[in-house]
Image (cartoon, rainbow, N blue to C red; front, side, top):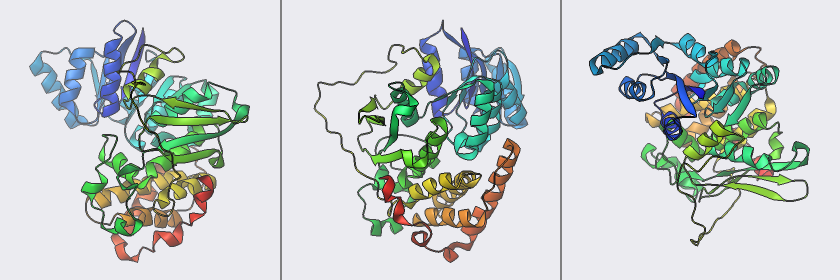
Amino acid sequence: MTYLTLLGSTGSIGTSTLDVVRRWPGRFGVYALAAGRNVDLLAQQIAEFKPRVAVVADEASLEQLRTILKRNGTAAPDLACGRQARIDAAAAADAGFVMSAIVGVEGLEATYAAVRFGKRVGLANKEVMVASGKLVTEAMRASGAELIPVDSEHNGAHQCFRAGLRKEVAKLILTASGGPFRATPAEQMENVTPEQALNHPTWKMGQRITIDSATLMNKGFEVIEACWLFDLAPKEVEVVVHPQSKVHALVEFADGSVIAQVSATDMRMPIQYALTYPERADAPVPRLDWTQSSQWTFDPPDFHKFPLLKLAYDAQETGGSATCTLNAADEIAVEAFLAGRISYPSIAATIAETMERVPAREPASVAEVLDIDRESRAVALEVVEEGGKIVSVAKKVAPEAALHA
């Protein structure tokens, strides 16, 4: 039996992972559940899956969890809290698989530890590779760890790459739904509200990733992640808008053949693939009905309306800590937009300005990455406070990225 450490057990990926585990009681068990402050749900998960270890964010949450477990008569596993406890759970000898599903750079240290200890890691946290792709890749090569992407596009790409040799690959094509503003005229973007931006047409996700999908920043992060996961240059990764969200990724080979990965829009599919790879186990969700008439469309992204996609390409080309700053500035800008402090177009302007103010350098450790992340957040907050002083993003982000379309 393979035992899992689940980083982010109470989030959407975490609960979907446990649903897959539930389907395979003799094959997968749970070594550790690491959550934040949702102790009520964590207590339910402990009662059902009986992990040996459970980790929460802080001492207050730990005391709440102890109280709930005692009240419910649930046998308590080893309980701990904080960053070191997450790292220990990820690196533990008994953890055969680590699911990295903590949102943001908060999950970086534990994921990096799992990689250093040679684990198979299901990567559902793209910020790990965006902020620290070089360090994680170097650690993976040194330890022999496996990174199996769980994000639907990268998981689809992982499957497509199995069709040929790396030297035969011409390019990777990632699909984007286009978000809620795919057909919205550019001149109307100034008046976009948080409620409109959170109304994603295809996926139900957390607030930040939903806004990132609306700006196409999420797709920019996926371009960066793909470069590290599959050893690609930015020019070898193309983005196309595919509103139906049925084709998750395509790989074009040197002879012009294109292999596409198609599946239901349910995260249990890529999660199970990561858990059972290289085997393909029985589908955890209903199969697609190919007898039903459907239409799939593919269009180039509008880099003028979605300048953050271009900025992501530029950051990956720059290298070093540029992508770490990109991610940190985006988180601050999205929070400011959701709080009504800046306009929708100012998300891109804030990020572009932060990128100019924070110099890119080559971090030598995860600790340095986290220092750069904190510095970038502080600068982004300054830019938000300056508000109207921000120069139009159109003057900062040139549209030459059309060459990627």
